[in-house]
Each structure stands twice: as structure tokens, then as C-alpha cells.
Amino acid sequence: MIRFLISFLCFICVSVVASAQQTLNRQSYVEYGESYLSQPWPALSRQSFARFKTDGNRVEYEGQVFERRRHLAALAMAEIIEGKGRFINEIVVGIDSMMREPWWGIPAHYSKAVPDYNQQTIDLFNAESAALLAWTCSRLERPLTKVRPTLPAKVSKEIHHRMLKPVLGSKYWWKTAGMNWNPWICSNWLACLYLYESDEVRMQKAVNEIEGCMKAFIDSYPDDGGCDEGTGYWDRAAASYYECLYLLDLIKSEEMADVTMLNYKRDKVARMGAYIYNMYIGNDYVVTFADAHSNKSAVQLNILFPFSEFINDKKMAGFSAFMAKKDNFWNNPAALYAKSGNFPTLGRELLLLQYVDKLSKTKAEEPKSEAFYPNLGVATMRSKGGLFVAFKGGNNGESHNHNDLGTMEIFADGKPLLIDCGVGEYTAKTFSKERYDIWTMQSQYHNCPQVNGFNQKEGKEYVADLVMIGHKHGKEKLSKNYLLNLTKAYPEEAMIEDYMRDVELKGEEIKITDVYTLQKFIEPTKLYFMTTIKPVLKKEKVILGNHTLSYQDKVVTASVEDCSELLDNHLKSMWGDNLYRIVLTTKKKEKKREIVLTIK
Image (tube, rainbow, N blue to C red):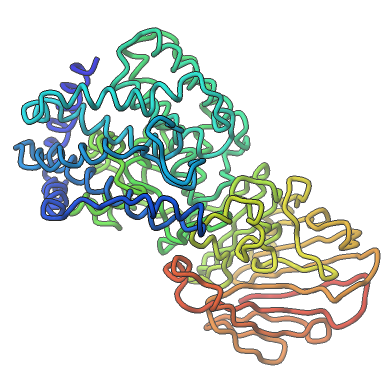
């Protein structure tokens, strides 16, 4: 099978790329690889690995190991494209260094302070590293063998020891999970199977297991196709699920007749794909609910366009062409390849090369969608004049959850007005019992109310139903509005009888109406709003650059808090150096109140 694959991929990468070479500058891949020829391979230290257990730092070791993988991926792609053997010696050095690593994953996913070669736990990056090595060595088997005849057999042994053997039959939690770990690992598992599993019995057993994993994932996914992990993880949730289908199809076309899984819930798969362009705001910005690591579009072209072809989604294809044009793909494809993951995704890039001719003929269209995801509890609205609103219901027990029910993001003219901060640098706290001690996870640092002195709590029992009231034409302007029921978003101690938030977009004005009834008044209600624009307070107004948030002076007082010191380096890279919190506090000791705000 490997011999067939090598010739198959040679055909893909030479003939298909050649057919589009009038538009695609393949030389950029070579130049990207050349930039690494003179660079030393990054050293990995046990001390860096152990820091996660000692002081919670995970980024130091991750930076080292991801740069090492990036180095190999750059050289491999350059050699695949050029095919002259110039990069082979350095690739061998990189493979040797990689195989000397005791484990290929990251410390946050390992039980010990230092890795043990005999304890091969399967995590995201152990799996992804195995797939990178598999694609590199299978694709370049012939020139690698000339330099080191024993290398292919050694690589095969390591891939079996570190990936194929420990994953098969093991009861890892992620195999039944409805979040990104499941398809992310399975897609890399399938790549290793396709390229390096020669035993038919083990192949069949592994495929059966993977299909079970895939069913568990898609069955738990919201029927509307929304990704509760947010846009930042769509690339490794829905997109990795598609990648699983693609690789499964390759395996089954050679080895097996049963294609049931390939057609399983195809309509839902299409909705899962559409989510990513429905969450696109404009000016490269995307909705940042949950653990978003970027406020700009992080979707990868090398999986976006193939996915669009699989589900025959013209809007998704147009979005792909738009991204290719905006990001200068045709002149410098290596720049996108370099940013296609924590390290470049070689397998996906080879997949994209099959489609460059068709991509070049696809009309570029920037998405201007409005969407309602009733199962996920997310909706978006936009005006003709440039206002965009996204808001969130759902529950506070979602994957990569933040306590953010009722929050909203508002953009004007393609720029952020009221923001969802996203997530800072991952540490040991991020996925521990102390997660909600981190400020970015807390409702008072989202655009949410604080009721009777209580903020929201984490857990699936804390919910907010989102209902579309209607998109209707009035005498003057089109009106669109949604209602969020926040009654059950807070603990019982908040003494809420009911709390409703209505968000309406009418023309170029956003109206936010909060109506609540309390069982008992304890403390004034506060409405929080986060922004990177320095607010200026005036009578019944908060000035935000060219826009205004208006409030009722008889009902609330307004104040501003500078939260800039909370920003870590990662969040500063997203939003800049400044962050402010607008606080609107009710004046009277009342059990019932309506608060009306307008933004225009």
C-alpha cells in the first residue's frame, strides 16, 4: 500500500500542481524550506518539560517542540516540491532528533514530570507528530533510503510503538468525547494507518474503533452544526472530522467495501462546515466565544476548500477563494502553510494541492451571513451600514466553556466595539479545578449582568435559552431581534424570579432591553460591557469612538474601570494594550426593573 501511495502522491503533487503553476508560486515552498537550512534544530530540555508540574508553565516547552516540528515540515514540503535532494540531509537530521525524543506530546497532557519512552500516552501532539513523520517519510521514502537505507524501517517501528500500538484497544476518554480531541487524534491516527499499517486484521480493528469514535463525536454535536468550542477550535473539530472522512475514504477505497460511515449524517456535516463562515464578521474578524486564541480568522485554507468541495457548499468555496486572495496564497502559499497549525500541517497541504486548479477558478466572496443556531444558542445579526451583533445562550458546561450566557459582541464598520476577550495563554490552571479563578472565564468580564451581587456559575445546569422573536419589516426599517432567558444562568442565591434580555437591531441602531423580577433585592444589578476603546462618560451616554452607548440616567449610573493590567502577552496580541470595563449600576432598591440601552 505504501508503494501505491508514494506513486499516487507523486502524481498529485507534480501533475496537479503543474496544471495550476501559472497561478500558484510553488517556489515559495522551496524558499520557506531554504530559510531553515542554516538554522540549528531547537534543543528540548527536561527542565522545560517539567515546568508544567512545577510552576504551571506549558508554553516554554511547547514553543521548543513546535519549532522543531515546524523546521521538519518546512524542509519536507520544500523537498516534495523541488525534488532535487537538497533538503534530504537536513530532513534526516530532523528525523533523527525527533526519534531521540522520549515522547512526542506536550507536558500538559502527560502524567509525569519528565517523559518516559516506555509510557506512550496518546495526546493531540503525539498523534500530530506521528502523522507529520508518516507523511514526510512515506512521501520521501526513496531519497531518504538512498541517504540512510535503514531509516524507513526505523520510522515504521517508531510510529507503531508511539502511535499505532498504544492507541488501539485503549479506553482513552477522548474516544467517546464530543469535542476536538476526538477527530483531531483520529485524523492523525488514520493517516498513520493509511501510510504504515500493513496488517489487515489490525487495520480492520483500528478502522472499526475510529468509526466508533467518529459516531460518538458527531452524535453529540449540536444538530444545527454549531461548534460549542468556538471558531478557534472549529479547525480541529468539524474540519478534523471531515479530514477523518477523507482519509477513511482513501483506506476503504483500497481495503474495504463498507462505506456506511462516509455517508453518516451528511446533512449535519454540511451544517458543521457552514458554521465557520457564518461566524465571520468582516475585516478578517471572527466571533470569539469560548477559548478563542485569536479574534482574526484562524481557519486554514488547506482544509477549508477541500471541505467545501466535499459538502458542495458554494458559500464556503467562495470564502476559501476570498481567503486565498486576501492572504496572497497564489504568490506566497508557504506563508499560509507556515501558519496552518501549531506547526505546518503537511498532510493537509498535500490535500490542498489536489484542488489548486479548481480553487483558482472559484469566485472569491467575503461572507456577509446572519445565522441562528438554536441548539448551540448563538445568533448573529448585521445591518446594511456595518453594524454586526453576535450573542450567546446555551449553557455553562460546554467544552472550553466560559461563564458567558447573555454576552454579546458588537462590531461597527469592521472594528470591535464591545468584545469577548477570548482566552489568554494556557497554563496549568486553564484545564484544572481552578479554571474559573481565571478572569477571562468569569461572567463579570463578559458583556453580562451581575444580579444581586452574584455572577454566573459553571455547569450544564446554568442555561440561557435563545429565541428568535422575528425579523420583521416595520413602517420605517427592518427590525431583527432575539430574546435571551437568563433566569437559570445564575445560582439560586441570586434570588432571580425571571430575567430576560432582548437584543434588537433596527436600521443602524442596536437596542438592548433587560427586564427582570427578583424574589428579593440584595444588591444593585450591574451590567458589564468590555471594550478596547477608551470610554468617555457624558450625561446618559458613553462615547466609544464614533459610536455611542446611551442609557437612562434615572435608572443607572455609569462608571469605567481600566482593566489593561489583566492582559497577558497573548491577549495583547489580539486586542492591543488597552482594555476597559463599562459598569452600569441600578440606582434604586427594586425587585422589578427594565433597563433600556441603545448603541448607534
